[in-house]
Figure 1: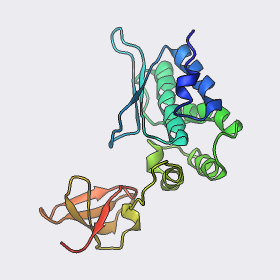
Figure 2: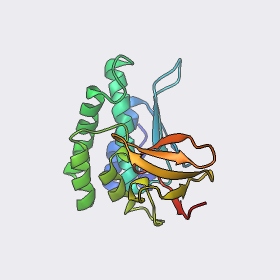
Figure 3: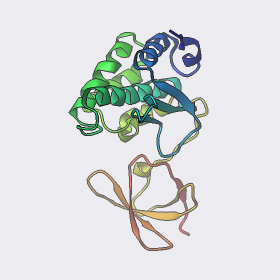
Figure 4: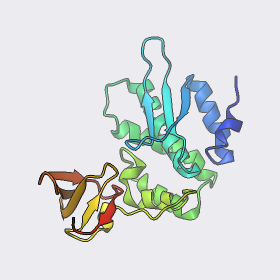
Length: 205
């Protein structure tokens, strides 16, 4: 049975590596570290034909984000093992599996105090991604090695202008239940943005 602990220690806290290595072996999972993807931090694919379970994680996550994302995807794997596609992707079954799988790492005190506090709060009702929890997301960002000053939608003033990576320009509008309405300047169309979408403030175009 191969031991992936040494390779995994490059990406996650060393004490967590043997546990994740064991999970990879126990599930016969194909575990891949991938290039950065702006749309997601990690991904799980269920077995297809003769292919095994597959989990991919972005290579550029800090150790704590990498570990939490890995647990998130293994919770999907465990949920699929128990229920196949008969339950919601982030329903009660997945939430319970995520909490159960995360527990040993919290007990090992692998996370800094502020991450542990944010993570415990998040685990009261874990969501589709750690990115959807503003407090946990911002806390984890503090540990990025190449940390830049990140500006998110929720920090902008009402009606402030901003651009996104593609160069499109928007103006922030009012908040709905969970997202902000933003007006695209060139098309005058309204788009919805998550509060922690990363943007670039600009002067009035």
